[in-house]
Image (cartoon, rainbow, N blue to C red; front, top):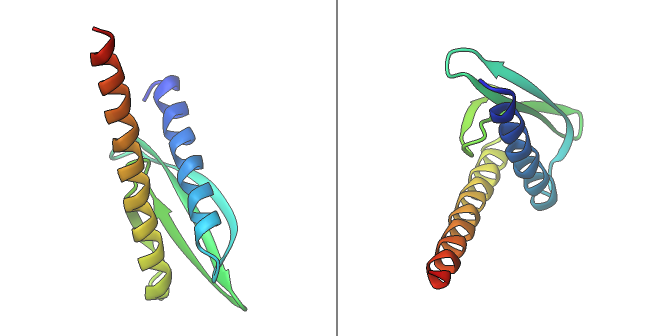
Length: 107
């Protein structure tokens, strides 16, 4: 992984984290940390969520995939994360489509 690829992955993960934190209101995002997945040569982000006195970890990839969750993570939390990840991917696709259309209009 190059330094540039690492920076892109971290920017993407920061974007994903901010969307999740903004849109998931019934759980609190307590902490996050980056992890290196040597097998897939990716930076992953571990997100520590809580509600009351309970805590769960969810690990996401820069491709908006859930890579791992605590065994007892609430289904509601996982569903909310999944739904927001779909939104992130659709938003990114829409942005790429808009750039492509503008580029073709200039030609």
